[in-house]
Image (cartoon, each protein chain N blue to C red):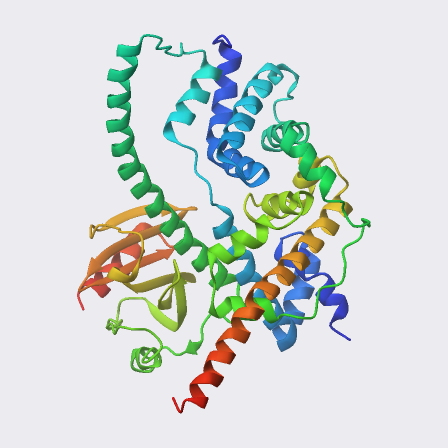
Length: 248
Length: 193
């Protein structure tokens, strides 16, 4: 019963609609109340799931071009003659096939990156960001045994400035993987490891650095595993941590 | 055809980055690709025509979403959607959180976009639009209130009901699967598996 007034505010808390004072009070309560923290965690995960599932429909490139043309005043091509239409149709089909492959692949990649960024944010927002709490890689790595269908190595961090905080299970595109949380100068960085062939979206093996929601992200494929390193630390730190993993 | 001018340039700069999001939202409302395309096309044309009435510095996103949503409400699909699904009596205060967390707990272990998408599809349109603006577009309550032309209290009420309804739908969807799995396990035991 004590928690009822807090629970009534839980959605506002998670939607970012409380005042800073209310948020501080809520944070303090959630830290001391396992029922509310469990409730908050499950709701955060449902919010994230809706966020991902809600981005369901993508307009076609042709439709975008048509609307863009209608607002910029670019003349719209009208093809009235049958033979012209036939020739143009062949060209459109060829382009559509190319766009389907190219744009489909690109939007799939972007969705994976976006999902990775969401996972990282949700983890940091969670009151229990890691399931296995340890700075010892020989404790964290065995924790994943039997939980994920592959094994991976954790790098030696001595003199690197990075500190391992722990790990947890992560799911991207319904594929299980490992999430490791590192700290460097008070910035938290997530390293995600998934089995490359289990991810529905092909990321084509190349290393890539980019920014997602203002986070620096680096991804590469190694020994059949797909790695993602993401965080608000600078790109050099992200790259340094990635290099430590690549050296394993 | 709308003619190109400096005003349409600034409209383009503001409106085209929202194209994918508006289309996604339109498709969720209409539940049909062709109708979504018509809705988005009409929205852009109306918005460009009315752009001179838009006050620069105010919330363009809420403004163009409002145009899309109003255009939808006056369409055949929109009228059908809003007339056939009556809203429960709305109050301007959020409800207490629902205690039953089972569907969420199940979701944690069996998260499925398809399940959630079906559940969102099954929501009445007023709940669906509030939930999508909050969770997918990440609008604030105030922004949602501006977009839907309703008070902030009603936004909270609709969100609360949408979430509760979603949980109930997921619960109903997942329960038969749970029972089927249990029955299969029972049969397995009967056969000594």
